Image (tube, rainbow, N blue to C red; front, side, top):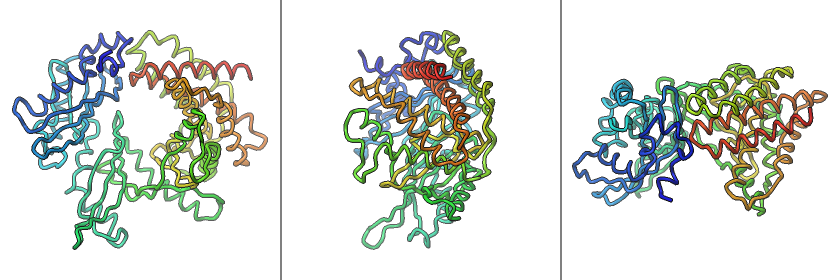
Length: 495
């Protein structure tokens, strides 16, 4: 099988190929290496050549558009080194639509790229491949995140860094920074890593300090500053025996849609602990932290959030969640109508569950509570990413955590059949039981809580399946549908 066949998720999805015939070429590394080489540098020998092109991160959008990224490794022949960059690509049904997007969204940004150090190697960092109806733009030129250009520009950020992190705090004056995208997702958000640097000392030593920036066009990251400050006040109040760590929010810059955060030391180790358990190897860290310990910590942390009384965030009812899910399903069915029966039947089950039990009182929720948001330093846990906080039923956070835990286990087992561990239900029950035991509000109300958690868990598994189809990941989508059917059967047997 060819390299292009291995990378192409369109195999078995002929309806998408029919609507966007150039999408096959967009997933072909050799074809895109040639096309982007010519587009970025023209026919002239510019001293740069693409050594590797990796297509990925596709997402189906409304109006017959597909967005994706091409990760490039580029050789600078003059300097004798290689560097990496990302190209955002958007494919349209018609080249006129592609040209319109370029003129409306990208051309205004190109008028501001002069002397941007990241873009110096590229004479044409954005453009249109007319025969493919494809618009391309080199990071940080992004029509969906127009402020990203300024959020990566030294002359724009240096005064801000010096004000936000003065010499009295860092121990040195910020003289510059090294930049790289830490997480550049599919749509309208980007996490940046800034390695702030000092001027060289007399012996040539350069001091460094790492911070993170989050650019999010929704503006939701503005909530992180009041939320983290409120949680820190709550921890200092002495009402909590075991406070967890949260990162320090340095500033939110509304004109850039940019949140600046200090680093939270540690790493998200639960996935590795889970993988070790599935392999049958040790699931204990060197400091003695076990998989079960980490799951209990997750339950304790989300219980603390729910009891904190923080009043920040919009209300998210189950009906609002279902409205959002319906929009996502409609988008997928527009591309893949053969999925109508499976997705609509599952949606009907979720709506029936929502109507059959009373909502719980709304409390402060993280809004995107997954084990990847838990950062461990030794046995000390911390929580990150507060841009999705809301007021919702506690079951929203709990159901999402359980849905992602089940899907992670299934994904690992499907990728590695030698992982037969069947402790999924035990780990999920450990999480939920630990939560209930840490929150006295559920004494005598446990059955109510469990009913709503089951609802939100199934809702989130269906959402994961829908998102997987939208991201052209059919194997993951089918795995999610299998888990969904199992959970519905299990729920039916105990009702």
